[in-house]
Length: 340
View 1: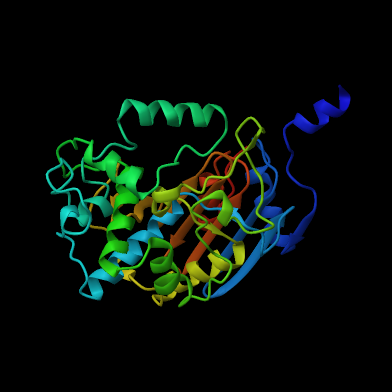
View 2 (view 1 turned 60 degrees about the horizontal axis):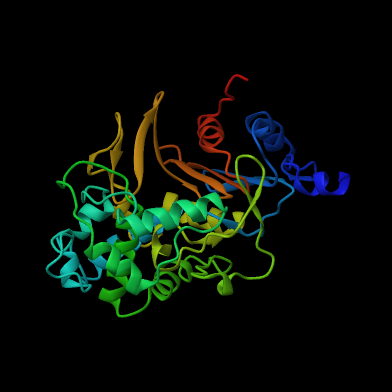
């Protein structure tokens, strides 16, 4: 029984620590609470970056969750620049949803979470299947492209124009861009974003069979191991796996303006509270600073990428437990430590 208990007890923040000692000292008090295991933090300041790794390393492979959406959004802005699509392009111009309630939904409204689509498919069978998968600590996004399109055609959107976060919308945006490019979504992501930025260890597995060796195991907020989330056809909304080193490359390229589809970051519409949203990228005032950001959460991972574009600063936090890391990232970006 003792061995069984040891195998099932929640993990603790790793004591195997590497990286910049000063950054480690600032990070530790921000991540000590909650269920933790392996955490990587990268701080970028005017082009120079420092890392702090707790049981992790610069090349450890994490699920980044919905940070994937900003990559999809930048591919959207890039596709506009290429003349393949426009903000007003309708879904039924690209994918077979003609005659359904989602036919007239525009790509711009998908990118701004303004389409009226629900967060997830509202069909009873999909909601029940997702609930069972989550309870079993498994990936709830199992639909292939045929299944995703069936979900879309069965959906009746609400009125457009008001922000309502939608993973279904993020998935459809990515699949529509893939259709416009004539290449599957993983190919578009790789060819137009990952390769140009040198992100050779970042990939979209789509199914379990695509997961590369060495991928970390995730843990839920109670410290229980979870299955990987690869998300199949919904992968454009949250299926990317990446490393601290690659995500630092991504953050630097965004700060430098060298990444494809930079117009995705520009705020266009009102978001929740006092925030604004561009194409998936969110912007909020935090104290005296403007923070551009997106976070991610899967069944067993949490992530946050926060940018202060005015000061050319960025902070990335990747964790293989589902305990949120947003507050730690923003505190580091602001140069403050939240009170315990």
